[in-house]
Each structure stands twice: as C-alpha cells, then as structure tokens.
Amino acid sequence: MKVEGSIKKFYQYSFPMQTILVTCNNEQGNTNIITIAWHTPISIKPPLYGVSIAPSRYSHDLIMKNKEFVVNFVPYILVEKAHFCGKHSGRSTDKIEETKLTLIPAKKTKVPIIKECYAHLECKMVQSLTIGDHTLFVGEVIAVQATENIFKNNLLMINKTQPLYYVGGDSYTTTDGTTKKEF
Ligand SMILES: Cc1cc2nc3c(=O)[nH]c(=O)nc-3n(C[C@H](O)[C@H](O)[C@H](O)COP(=O)(O)O)c2cc1C
Image (cartoon, rainbow, N blue to C red; front, side, top):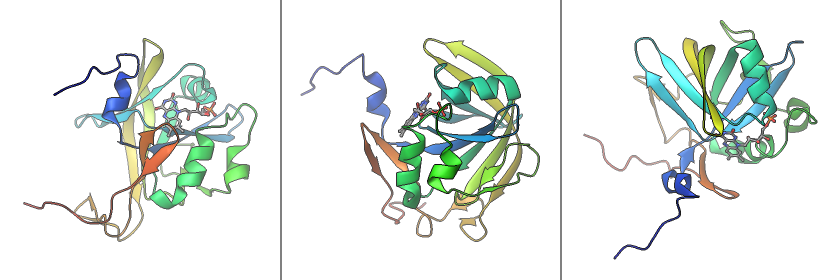
C-alpha cells in the first residue's frame, strides 16, 4: 500500500544526499564556504560538475562574479562545521574564522581547498542556468586532489573515510564503513 507524498517537499524523497562544502572567493580574494546537498557530476568529456545554489545565497553572487569554485568532499567527522556553514551566511559571518577549517592553495583555481576534506574538484564555471528558484552552476573540473591513501583505484575506501550525508531537516548520517556488495 502507498500513501500520498508531498509535491511541495518532493526533494526530500531523494535524501539522504552526500553533502559537500563549496569554497568560493569574493573580489578581494577572501574565501567563503557554503554547504551543498544538491550537486552532481554532469559530463565525463568534458569533465563537468554541477552545483545548485539559490540566488539568495552570498556564494551565488561570488560564483557568478568570480566564475570559480571548489567542491570539497566532507568526512562525517566535520558534521558540526558543515552544519554551521549551512546555517550562516558569509555576508555577515567569517565561516573560516568561526569553523577553524584550514584553507590551502589549490593547484589551478585561485579559490583554495579545505585541508580537512578528503577530495577536491577545482572548477572553472562554464555555464550558469537559473531555473525555478535555483541556479545550476556548471563547472569544468580543471584539477583534482585527494588525501593520500584513502582512494584505491580512484574508489573511496569507506572503511577509511565515512562521507557526510544529509537526511533532511537538521539530520545527518554516514555509511557504517562496510561495503554491502562487491562484484
Ligand atoms: C545540509 C545542508 C545542505 C544545503 N544544501 C544547499 C543546496 O544544495 N543549495 C543551496 O542553495 N543551499 C543549500 N543549503 C543552504 C546554504 O548552505 C545556506 O543558506 C548558507 O547559509 C548559505 O551561505 P552563504 O550565504 O554564505 O552562501 C544547505 C544547507 C544545509 C544545512
């Protein structure tokens, strides 16, 4: 038996979603961090990654102007810091100062990566598509870095690092560190 779902909250049926921290710079070169659950790989050739950001976010203005962003994949241990970055705006809060996350230079973008995250996609914005109440920023992935020894054949070893997932509301989860089925 099925019960009627909510069209208004349709997106909640896709949770839990892996949650990332996106870094972006203002015109002075200061870095902001936004927490993002709506994101996806888009194309392999060319390598494109998309992040969906509402126009009301400070980061929306920054990426629109500066045309660069970095996707940082977050270990579950950073859950408090990720939640903080998703509840405060860079317009009024210095999230780097408040979270004490460490910025280190990226390889190709002026936007830095977050040291405590485990993988990083440096993106040059090639297209922005404002549809409905969000903008899909499409970034060409121009450099990739990851923490040593946690990927094997480019696959995350989830017994070493548990990624952060957003369940909706104020709830988060992670994998339990075991692969359920391997072919
Ligand atoms: C777990 C989580 C996931 C979020 N995902 C998104 C998202 O995909 N897109 C978006 O526009 N905002 C998302 N938000 C909201 C922004 O992170 C939040 O509005 C943030 O304060 C914006 O920061 P900024 O104004 O410094 O850019 C999310 C918030 C949380 C807590």
